[in-house]
Image 1 (tube, rainbow, N blue to C red):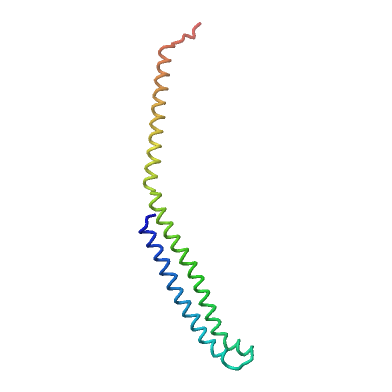
Image 2 (cartoon, helix red, strand yellow):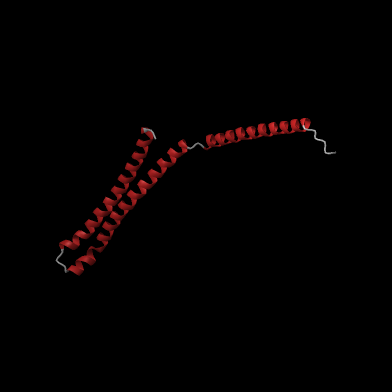
Length: 134
């Protein structure tokens, strides 16, 4: 794969991970803002957790989105790069033409062999006219 195509796939990966990172960071930040009020008030531990739960859920969702998004971006960009590299490496029409060429050569060799065997058989029939009348 040449440098231009590699740069294109690396750029796609960077953009996808950056976009998903910004979304995840926004969710984590908003979750922290929601949970902040529970930490400042003088509540018991159980009440703080229940009040901060929506913010904690958003923060965990943000982290999960980032981790999933990073894996997804890696998978999609590597798959696309691999498919592109294989499409140029294995040209099916060229492979098909090579196979047909080899088969044509082998069939021509077989035809020549059969013709030479037929000539030899005719020659033997003409040369060895054996008389079975004894």
